[in-house]
Length: 384
Image (tube, rainbow, N blue to C red; front, side):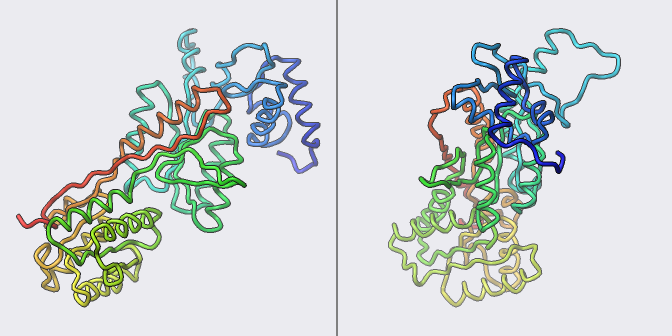
């Protein structure tokens, strides 16, 4: 885009309508380039003109009312879409399939831990429906997530987004507002968000982490424990939900919350972790804690190893349940763990977005899907 002042918004939207009158159908990317504005701006213009009954939104662009159903617009050029091979001439069927293929952008905060199974679930569902997924991995930072999202949206080849954004703090709240203004069909994964004057919710698919934490507490109560503590990591967006479920279950079983260990630490990659780990074990001994729910697996494994070095038996002196079940089984002893339904989350998220894309009704209500985790019982809580 140039730095020179462009037309006023009303003038620009009048240009969009005039271009449609001349051509009958236009692509979002072509309009953005021709009018020298961003793809997001053109999407907003099309949404407004459609709401006024002047044009009709279609996947990938817009048509005049009474114009052709422009499913072919979905095949706009995309920097991630492979072009034809030199010398090849795809037949009509192949070309039509390429044009009509749904393309979904996906941005997750990590490609190494927790998220690979979610990604597999999305890809499995996408492959079954003939859709394409463009994946980007971020770093749990709102600025990085916004950079990836901007590039995907600006590419003009997307039909929708699956995203696990940072939602907390000033940067996270600003990112949520930006997403809601992007005028792109999207579903949040393992995140919920709402904003606006009436606190409108965004569509989402999440694990019921509070329920999972409650399952862990009930398991330990059934084993006879009454001093059941909680250890979480400060930066994790899952920790508040785990804490909420732990507190609810403790109240349900009349466990004295004011006397139970509830500690939040840095994660095991932080240079302060060894000191934090020693403090947690000291607090367990001082408070008489006999069972501990730990989020997440790496911290729980480190905790077991250090307990053994200090002569504290697991589970004889301290029963431990991990939250995530990514690598919990690799511990010695293998860790009992709450397993969020990661692949099911991915499949459900794609299904919800596909349903949104297939339903042209602008009044379609917001859907929020919650999926149950499971508890996998192993040796760290039950002596074998």
